[in-house]
Amino acid sequence: MLPHHHIFLGLIFVAILFFSFPDISFLNFAIIFFSSFLIDVDHVIYYFFKKGNLNPFNAYRWFIERRKQFHKLPTKQRKNFYSGFYMFHGIEWLIILFLLGNYISPFFIFIFIGFSFHFILDTLHEIYDKRTVDKISLIWNYLRFRKLNPKIGDK
Image 1 (cartoon, rainbow, N blue to C red):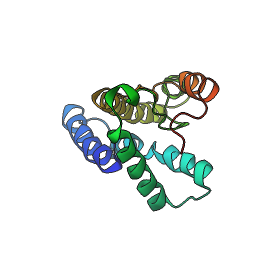
Image 2: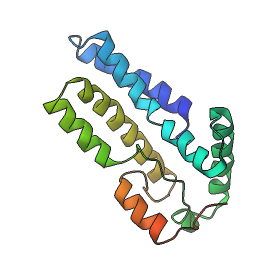
Image 3: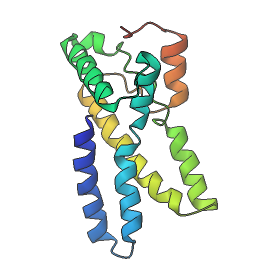
């Protein structure tokens, strides 16, 4: 899903939460909102490791081009397209954030909420695009794509 979609839907999500839970502070709503899309910084990190460039605008253009390549593929081939290894996209982070939020500080619960919303959007988008849901688990992503098929989708 493109960043502007995450930002727009994150804003709507936070607005709904704001009216549903007025006792939550503005700072906590801001944490939810920003964590709902800033998690995608791992896309820029992936781009850096692939291309050696940290410019987020170049990364955005590169991902748009890969998206075009993906959409040109027949539906059956889309399941084998490797979108990349995104280190913050995984249920493992949700578990860690949830535990930190319950045992260390509630601050992490608000990041957990933002990340969870982001994961739900990404998963729905991957299902809609008829691709493999590869951003749900870091371990699964690594085992399925990096060890078993290291060249899939890399160009």
